Length: 315
Image (cartoon, rainbow, N blue to C red; front, side, top):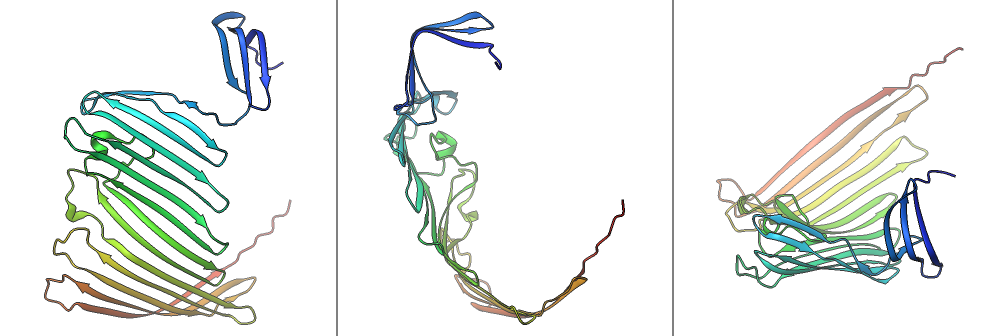
């Protein structure tokens, strides 16, 4: 029954449902009744359980690092966390080792990557990189996410690449963390952002601004018995330069209350809306001939309309 082009034969087979493994002795593999491989002993999984052991090695060759070989080893520590250790050797640069730890608990999961080269034989320096990702759902309303990354120098990826989770093809390596609280009528969050230049050809002057922090509060309220909706969008951000280069940095506060009157029927809808947006800046390191405090206030009026068209088809 089915496709039987490939067949495995053995003089003896033992299946262990408890370990999820099967072993064979004096086995041979046939393709269309032609033997293609013989092995005196073999072991293979019979389910999807993870097992401790060596993973597939990788081999490469580059002008920067020479012959490059990695030999990862996987350790299934527990059903909810594991560890991968990856020794690596580059003929031009030397020995490097990396580790990747993953975990999963009731309301949180994450991953920690770290790799280090004690001494690069070309640069004669210690080189390392680390990464930490975590997501936690404290309650149905409260959550937190962390994405932290850092490497020892801006040529790290171009020289060494990443052996585990430390791979990045962008010009800047981003790190951020945020915590959020959400209700049906309100959401509040706090966030920080940081960027590291990982392009040796790029100037540090072009590194994006840090946000230390960004605070947001959004609110919305509708009334079931009235054609009335009220909302509020607000944000505070402190923008900071990574390097002191004379460019302005500072704070921005933005608030936008709005009120709308939605009228909806089976034929269509009409939604007039009135809003007022106010933005305030407080600038540092300002070298231009303008005040350090700037603001703008804009009234906003809009009208959104539409029709619902139905067509009856007779067969």
